[in-house]
Image 1: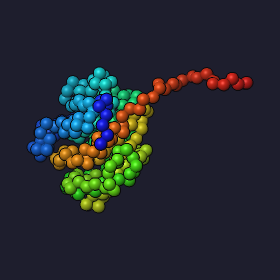
Image 2 (image 1 turned 180 degrees about the horizontal axis):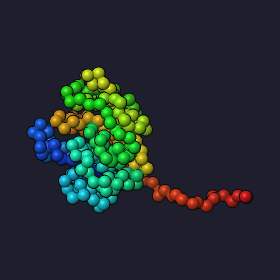
Image 3 (image 1 turned 90 degrees about the vertical axis):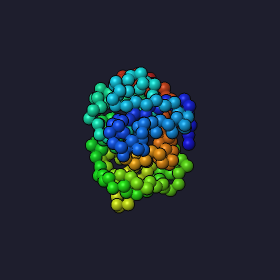
Image 4 (image 1 turned 135 degrees about the vertical axis):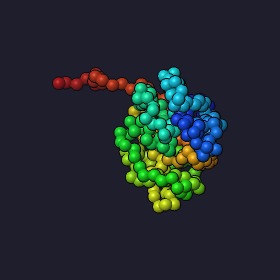
Length: 244
């Protein structure tokens, strides 16, 4: 796995299921965000967490201005995320902050705003077997992986997934019910990089899976901001003299 002790990661989680559903708290007693933060910290990143019910959802101007990559997990309370905070996150992505959107975060306000589509899909909670095929083996997010990896029990997501065509499609999932799904999608928006990664149903221990952890860790590294000179816009004088 890639390690970068200077990379500042904020792990955002709705943190509702874990407090209300024993099936979820069994796997994530301190919240999904705690598991994500733990393995990202062990990879060498500087990690903080934020949750929906904190003031400003934990995503204050100060927090976001000191975040290189934000990870996002939400499901039952997408509508409770303040539009003001969505605008704040959106601006930071356009300015260069990376964003990792996980599982049911496909329906989050921020992902739909960045994609400009409904981001709807087919789904089924029947603990399907999932085989995740690596279709971009040279991509940094797929570093060290084989042709595919498998998750014994997962929620099914199926096509059509109403998203724009990814800049790079890294993973495609096949489910034992017969469906396929674009499960690892990379985008750029403004100066920011976005990675959507499908696995992670709350009642299943998916985020304890070592390869899932590896993919998210490498996704964070890939989405990190790239140092660049400030962009210039607006009315610009000619570089060379010319005759009218």
